[in-house]
Length: 457
Image (cartoon, rainbow, N blue to C red):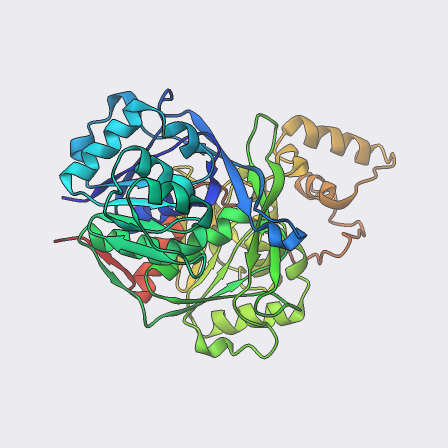
């Protein structure tokens, strides 16, 4: 029988501290139910992006609105006894969850049963309120030290923000930067065996790549013990790539908000690509300019020619198309991207179900949700008819930037010269992963690299 874990959520929990363990554990084959008091399956919890204020000279962390996190179970219907472990994300949610008696009852039941409880950052406020840290070693964000000491905990002052402490069934971490060790300790507490320490994975990053699309797979692979490096052209180890939060909020396409600052772990210049076993390309807006970089194209071609796994998510497919590695390939893509896919000389497959992926040799492609207005307007027959009417009547048609996607879908560019600013014609295919589980790409890589977890005990 597989393991199952309960993730206790609330509004303005920290974005990464909810989604990374949620998707990582599912990718490892562990069922995760996300619940929130007063909400039901299908409802959303708004998340908070908490980041170091040091970048701006502040004395404490900053906070911005994060993704909308979808719940998949009802808190009021949960049978706590059926779960093998409990996870408490941080952020601001624990401040009010810690005064909810139903929440405290839940935590005490897990604590009394000796089942693993993972808590990170401000999540330890809930443990303190439930009386579950008395006599236990634990750590947290520095600011929680006085509270945990008052609750009778053996406070372990964190030396870095990646520190974790395990004491019996209680596993605590400082902040989301501690996720790799935090998740690894939690999996082991569930009885799992972690493998993958001999593998080296390279992430190709850029400014305004999608927040989840880089951090979830990055930390999930680190948690398996893989050596994971993140690089970006013209940047070095320790530099930052700002990320973007793409979300659906009632508009006809996704919105964009500022995400976390992602810290690069290696320098791009002098990179030895041959020392890595796989390449991951996050999506977002970064691929639009990375696809113009000849060194990026050469890097992708090197991985493809060596037949090492290449996982491309979201608009990362633009880089694959620019590198000329999609020609003759079958691929999944959102219907919005059908015209671009076909123009890129790939065979577009109708996605069914919506969460579809396919591996072609070493190339792992993902179908998700593509966006920006021309991408969905290009699917509208009335829009296509309108464009054709103007063209046939030889009236002026002015199109700028992504608008050319509509012209391409209408088939009116065959004998027309056009310019797409800073975007080569060969780069014609994109896909997107937003909040859909990393499970899909991860499992494809896992099959090739033989990494993962074993919970068969």
